[in-house]
Amino acid sequence: MRFLHTMIRVYDLDAALTFWCEQLGLREVRRTENEAGRFTLVFLQGPASDDPAQIELTYNWDQDEPYGMGRNFGHVAYAVDDIYALCQKLMDAGVVINRPPRDGRMAFVRSPDGISVELLQSGGALPPQEPWASMQNTGSW
Image 1 (tube, rainbow, N blue to C red):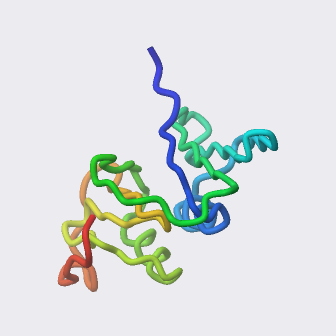
Image 2 (tube, rainbow, N blue to C red):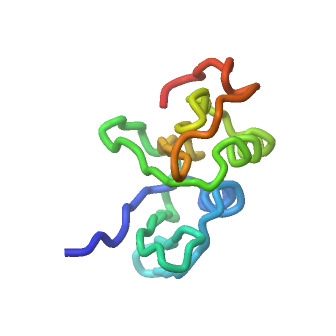
């Protein structure tokens, strides 16, 4: 058995792609447009060429309001090279850092569709540093 992907329904495909690709650094590996079914599937993969895990963004063309939030989904998690640099990049792009990386190891943000995304520092925690060390949590994560 091999893990293939996690599917997430998105309300605004452009906003979702901005978050997942431009801000988090995933890359689009395939796209399917289904006129008869009125949906688009976009598969995203991490920047490492040997990373097989994928996120499938499902965009239903006729969805007229955002999907309801359910914490039962949990979160998706990514190991990152520099948690402080990525959190700063996300914050500069207007993404709320819901759980800042105070410990130099873990942070949480949310996608435009409310999906909780855990960011974990690769190889162990970085030394605590400001402004992260004293930053409080915001919202739920």
